[in-house]
Amino acid sequence: MTLDPLFSPTIGTLAEANEVLVSVGHYLGPSRRGSLAWIDDYGCMVWGNPTSRRLPTGRWLELIRWGLKGIPNGGSQQFAAFRRWALDNLPNVTTFVSYSDPSAGHTGALYRACNWTWAPTWHRLRPPPTGQGEWTAGKRQAPKDRWVFALRPDPDRAGLVEVKDSALVRRGIPTYREFVGQT
Image: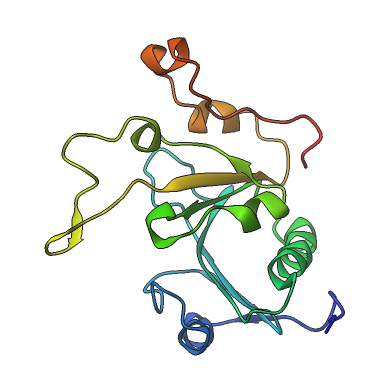
């Protein structure tokens, strides 16, 4: 089944997006935060300000939840439609950022299919001995993979997401590299 990528998406409320997230069985469940909800036939995307204090608000958006209904290629078609909409309607936004959880089986394949760039955090490259903390008693968090999508040029982007650790560089561990022409 192929849907028209321009089929009337909705800019909805967080409550409406949470209904979709519950219906598709998103592993994190509903979101408690988000300022923009994109809802369409493929599922929903919940966006908000980045949670990392190192990342700017206003010109960066964080994809907080991505709940898909399981339609083949639905995620890439949904993101392509959202990207077109964002270019027309969010003139100040330069960058999207999101995180995938390898411990939940998320490999980042969808981000790669949508031309996002892997931008590892320091915690991902060199996990601290204390772990990532516990959000649920008795269950330590695993390091997440960070993904970045360059919507428009941003002279600060590479410096904000690049891991500056000389020991990692000497060992040849990759860090974020911005690709010319990604936007």
